[in-house]
Image (cartoon, rainbow, N blue to C red; front, side, top):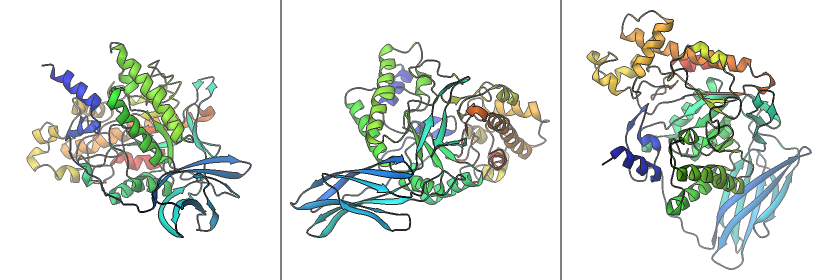
Length: 484
């Protein structure tokens, strides 16, 4: 039996987090069962199924176009919408004829990403009445803003950068993975602490990577509140899915449900079809899988997002340039994952020869601090070649590459603690080389984004993270405060 082939086909059809089956920073722990809250709800007279809110910005005003999907079980059930200012003042309160209402907001207070302005949020509340009693409500907090990606031909290729309220923004941040290998242990308090750490290090964007799980509402709400923009991948990572039959219907429902859930969050800057799947569609792959890829990510999912959340920019894959597997790694168009430093073992100075329009993945490994290492080792284990330490290094040649970079820039460390410290120094220096160079080249919008891999860990491990699984900052996170 060709086990690898069968596992490959199983993963193509199984809608579980890709990282559950192991990654080069995480263990193989495929879970089962329900790990988020679940409940049964009963309705007497009717219920509101969905509230879609669109924004039209013009002439210093914002027109809100609200559409409600609702069903009734009793006659004379009516629907209406109330809109409140950030201070709670009623701006509009009207019946929604056929579930539709348009309201003009005068003198709108715009939502901005962090360090560009404030984050005021308006409340849109859909209500069902029966016999003068409110029988169901659905409330959404929104930010009034325009936020999209600007793509225009220029002398370098084609721009790729975020524009909020007509202001161009250099995106600064990193990529986010699940906060725990056991998803049921992820807690709102820890997520808020992680986002606070990003804010302290001058991030303005987090990319939620497509090999994990979709964020909880509390995570997105805190990003709305604090002004952290979110690049949200759909959870398709590094593998082509079966886009036909029941599998397709299931994934279409997933796309629709997620898009509806996210469409009102002002923090959502982009919805991306997948992580590195376009990069993984090899020339040797069967044509039917190539056709499925294009149909799913460049046609059908784009149409679904456009229908459910027309105000959100959709990008088919990360990285991508022109689409359809054409010149995927072209730095002059689209976004880039550049792993020549680390996987290619090129020197840090290589970064200064590159001019990506938007670098959404690049990184170097380091070990967590000694206090974290002491949590899973005995004194005799504290050698990078010990059984325990090698078990906490999931990259096949990770220790070898860390050693090689230390040798390029430092003398050989005198002991294990010094080795751990220097691993964090080379991680910081490598990322700093890249980010500072790209920020110097933001003129003419040539380089307009740097999201390093990765913010966080899901267990104590040698990895690319700037914050370990206990929330302890590595040197890179401290360095980010300066280079961002």
